[in-house]
Length: 139
Image (cartoon, rainbow, N blue to C red; front, side, top):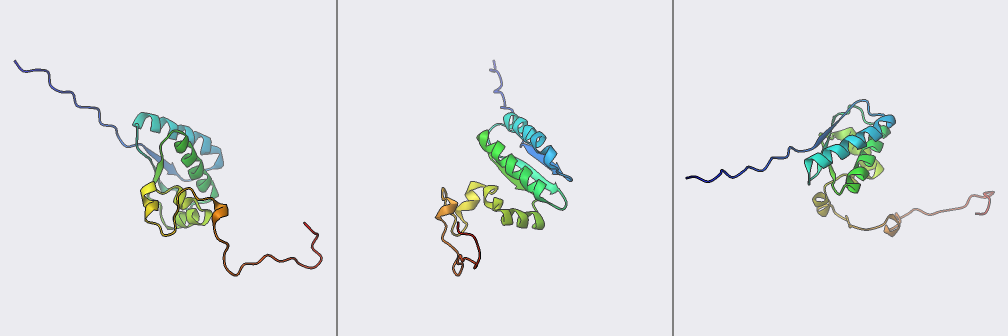
């Protein structure tokens, strides 16, 4: 007599949130709610945010990605970007969000990346001096 067959554990599909153009500031809250629902259903692991359909990125897209990252952090997970192309990558780098949206393992190989550092701990750029123009009011 054969025993019962072992049950196969359910396979969780990867959580993917697709951003399409146009992403507006008014949509950010709804996107965060969708991310929360996806993260809860998918279980542990990152939520993939597919930005391939964004087209020409702007600051509304950057704000959405920043808020999605904060939402994921509050839920104890992280996001990873898929299909991020040139202009969006440059915009994220310009705003300083490229490292915040990178996987933690990816930061280990970045030259000069230190975890837990504060912006105030950075060294000042060489050759930059503050000056006072004649006639400026005293601080």
